Image (cartoon, rainbow over the protein chains, first blue to last red):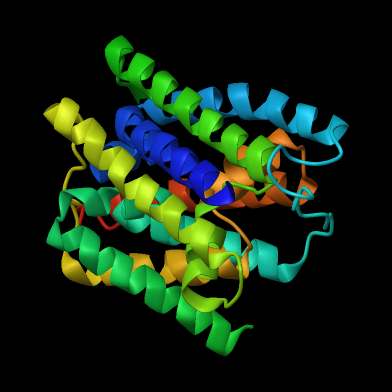
Length: 135
Length: 147
């Protein structure tokens, strides 16, 4: 059942990214370009996501377990450490260079653009390097 | 500041965002998992154990979902990246390394983390947003030409 849930969630997520404009890197860069012609669209993606997810997490907090599994697996850490800050800085810099964060880049594989394949190969290499250098 | 006013685009983005929120809701209330793409992809690639199956299916769905939208509405098909190969490689390495070091990306920290009011995710989201703004500013306005 967890596999069916994941497939449905993935389909919804991929469709949402495509409809929301996240799989168009130039549009994402237009959102990040505050000093240029700023395209605020992606703020609506974020807003729409929070609008639904916020109450969902409130519901989850009041339930003892999810519908099809034995327990919620939700992070519990609350400390702000160097890894979090440096990781977010590096991620944001990469996001600003190409206009891809992980979800849209993977969803965009559906269009088979060579540039997307190159980005995703480098994404995997970056994840691998993190495991080797800063596990 | 010069703002692009395009209500149609905003509406599509809002609908897309609602779907993403729904996806996170399905995974959370159905399976108890966080819809964080960097965590799901990293776990699928580098971790052994029982979580590989659902992670693989989520990724299949992610690609198929975007592909189905493109089939129905070709105008919404994923566009090719606008920057050259060296930039794509550098950006991919930074995004892969950074999201794993920082335990999340736009989905895990930005949507799920903020929704559960996690202080770590609030700080991480503010940090990668500002880093993204600054990077685009440097590349487009200080270095002068978009790569």
